[in-house]
Length: 343
Image (cartoon, rainbow, N blue to C red; front, top):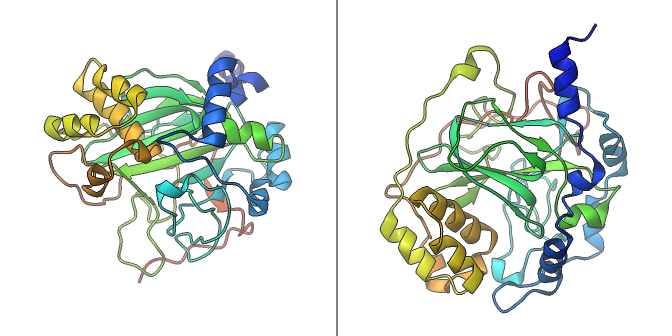
């Protein structure tokens, strides 16, 4: 028989469709949907086309929406980081016109800057490494509900399309600690429901820039996954790994970034934050999700908010519990062929 605690946990993980899609408050969602589709003076409109239909994957989406796991204990990866992203001035593109993932293949789309892990709504999302919660927010047109974690030494991870964040800004979290319940909040989910798979869009930022946690096959670039290019959950003694090198934010650079923001709302949000950490979280979100809101000269200067630069290093685990998953499988490689290591 199931234990009382496991039954309670199962009840906690129940996520309804409205919560999963994150469409409330409706007024905010509608306003941000209009911004994504039409743009404004500082944000180009998003771009779609017939190739966007490649994001509709009924084979994976329908079972996931029904609470099933079509790949068993492996997480389907539906999109990878694109190494040929168009400049942000062209607008966020969900088309497939010029793409290459870390394997030299095409499991991605034009502007995709993260890794999409497809999982049923209500799945536990955990910290990929020890960290501090920088920000919990919802931008309906840019990833829906999300959590930003600062892992020190220039590394920040973001967990997007969440149904229910379970942490607050400033909170310290351990490796493998539960931080949210998954969903598929955001504009793209509503547009693709129920044929687009619910997933967590997982970003990694190094020194304030998007990076791919995977190492390109055949290169000497270090992987950010602790098991080279094979993300698996932390378990056992790994869960006690609580080492964290505090981030040294450069307050001068932070002030310069805020001053370089040409968007009144974005600038007000950053400057109005109470602490350096909250200002940094707001600035990172604005810089990475809305780069065209900043003067071109500031963007070309790197927009780093850090006092020092940091190298790539193995740090991250799969952001899901070992109780649910063992590893990943790429949807364009359903048999799960082993990855080729560098060299």
